[in-house]
Length: 269
Image (tube, rainbow, N blue to C red):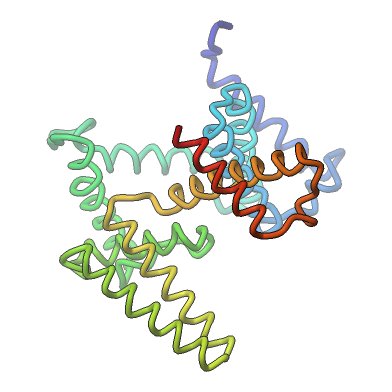
């Protein structure tokens, strides 16, 4: 194993210097000079997903690279803000440092935490509530980001509402609500109006997310796992068809379903 680099100050200063030069009107990169917060934001989101992908694949070298790319996004936004006179990279660091100290009174002060759940459900929520009151938020939902993936945002909204008591007493009641939404979807399908059908579909997604949340699931991760399972099994179907000299587009649904069932049995043995 290579020795870990410990000179953090020099490392970050080198990165900041590279960013400054890229945005320098005198000899900088023409592409970088044209960018603004809005044009860079999609890259920031993409890099966060690539970090998650490297973790999913347990690819540590890739994780190191992707974390660097994500850090560069933070530096990029901070550089543009500094040019506008709004804030600098050091302000970003100071703000998050102060926030982390504030949100961990059980580490940096005299508060007590019995376990991880106690930290998440009591201490963090109390600290975040204090921060929101200082910012003048009118609703517990105010700072749930619009740009989150829809499934993750739905779960966050539901978590926030549950924190103030807007919650089903029992998970079985969510199943009852799901049955109700399915019935409404059947009615919408009979009506044949696409707008109503899509509206009911959204309600179904939202209720199913609530069901998963009450089971303690991370719904985004649960769906990701289901997608990986589908991909794995369908690739198995494709491989089986190829071994039989058949292209997927030429196979009947019945044939592919038989191979799909065989793939499921393989995983269970």
